[in-house]
Length: 294
Image 1: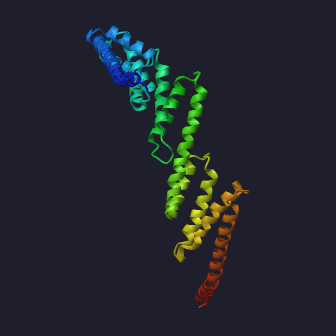
Image 2 (image 1 turned 180 degrees about the vertical axis):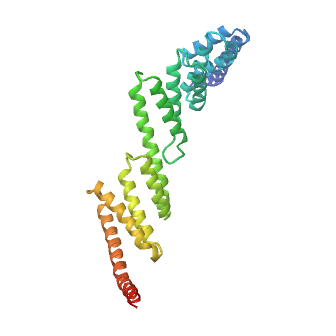
Image 3 (image 1 turned 180 degrees about the horizontal axis):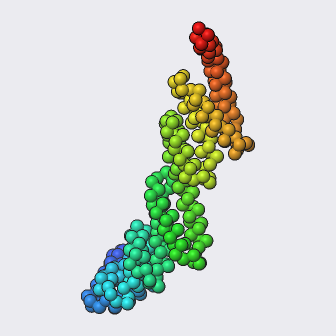
């Protein structure tokens, strides 16, 4: 390799980082010069230039500086909206949600109210976790979407928001199911029954409905099977109630064979218990009749 080429590469290795640093410094200096003018209109309009150029961080810096000075002026809602939207475009959904929430509460008559309410709901949606985690944000997003659709029923985004609601409801249903399943998994069958029934009550059309009804019946069976003898008969009866409800709704279920076997065990136990108790009951009846005769 030519020594001149080596020298040129070495020179460029020094020049390029310096050039990049100088460009960054010049950009910061340019923003600082605008801020130093103390002219809110100029700062806001330069922020809009960066906003249109999709340079979100720089736009945010200028909007945040201009916003306090524009309180009470016609641009007040504009700078608040574009500041929040810049955070949204910069993927900072937490800050965007906070700012859009403040906007909708403060500027209810603004021309930006519809997009602000929409972006508030979308910001919350973007923060929603998987069903395995706490769903507080999911619940808040569902409420925000419901409010948006109520305030703007003719919105062009209506179908999009309805689809979002379906997705979020699916997550809530799944979370409710997983909570109940945790009790089943750790052998807390009595708690599992309560939790699964609550899940079904809250989400009667859940995509997990068949699974939930299966686990209610199976939890009831295992709860009865592990109970003290004095309580088993009544608890097996409860299991059969859940079993019959399941079979009526899902006669061809993949769970049918397993539940049929469990139900047979429950029936045999109840029949045996009745047979064992019959002589004792008959003796008691005879004794009672004898006492009456005397």
